Image: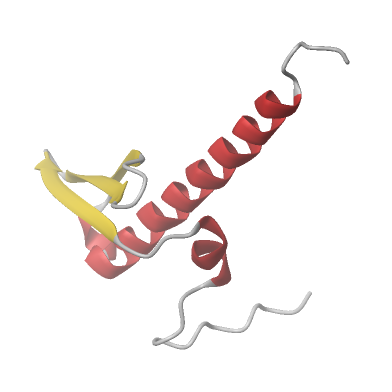
Length: 91
């Protein structure tokens, strides 16, 4: 298997572009030996939470929180498209 190419620092990963992430707000709170992170999409207001080990550093923790946020946004989109097509009305 080939390793994926690293993303250049100035380029936004494709998964974030597909989810429409342009502005993400982060909230960090220390909980015991762990770090609780909330990531909020400023456009939609969708929020995700996760717990991380602070030894990994904020840049990596932010990236992981953004990946989770992108996943949730994509999942919500596919769920809403499926529910729109199943209106219950037969023509």
